[in-house]
Image (cartoon, rainbow, N blue to C red; front, side, top):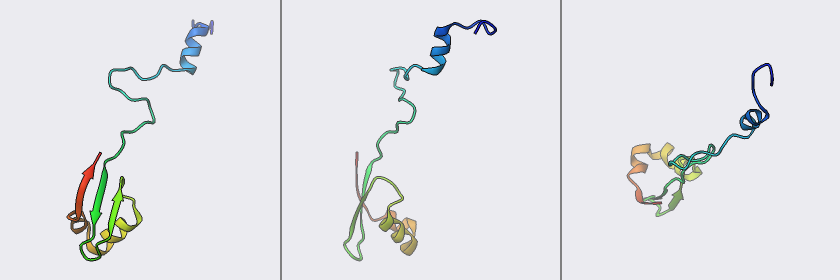
Length: 79
């Protein structure tokens, strides 16, 4: 510490960084919650609710019918 002209407080500040400021920044590792999307297959009447695009049934629909077609089945979006 003497070699680099640093105090114990400087070392601790490096090891325990301050949380993000309250100026609207979120702490590292946190995301905003994704919007809930509800899709309804007009052929079968099946409904899928998802917050991400990696949902099993939704992926199968997109593979079978195409992404644009499936996106047109979007019924509603919620926060």
